Length: 349
Image 1: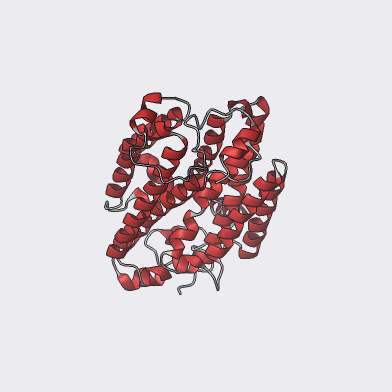
Image 2 (image 1 turned 120 degrees about the vertical axis):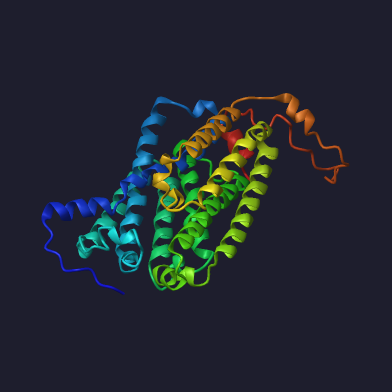
């Protein structure tokens, strides 16, 4: 590994470097919390109270601190590898601008602050926040360092998606278990995006030896294997999204074409030179993707609150049921509950 040059760094430069490694510009990813907020509210609108807005502000602050803590340790531990990357070698830690002992203190303090704020919301929220932080440790710290293991790197980093959804959920309600089908769909969708990020990175570097030195998992990845895995992630995501739609909110099927179109646009972007897919915080520079994503989020969000009874009739089962006669089928009117007790019963799957 190449070592950073010895630098005479001023205090102001040092402070800016420590602020930069927290990657506050990546806070846009915390929008993945929103589905966990919107879904329970669509079921029980009574949960929307003035106090909830304060709770959500605290929740986003907590999630941001935990995520920034993970970014700090990622920058510190990845610095030797980032120096081998054509663009990441300009990161503060790779350039030697970061005081390493101070960075470890920064990492821990951000975690403690995030968990402390989470405890003011609920124990379950704080527990999920802690799990989010622990996953960052497993992803970055040797000897486990899952980011170096092919496929496991994608799976463990993308599990942050359902964890963020859970954080949104527990900021709104005390329900213990949201729909498993939705969590898995969210996880696999994250894997789809992360798999394409890996594909774009590997294609951009080109030199397999250099790519393997930069990221250990690239020693075993190939562009073909990454694309095959992306197909698996996309298929699994859509399977479980479909299960959630059919079981809970059939109206969401009307928004599926927009979901598919957004995924297609993202796939195409992965083949571009210097693609924003490699740096998701820069995706706002892609107008078609942003328009597609915004339309998808808006339509899917609205459909959670709209009823289209004719769809229930259109998708009525036509084959003989294999359900034992002693078991009553679930009522068709499956998402019209307005109490916490009914919500808890509904989502125990």
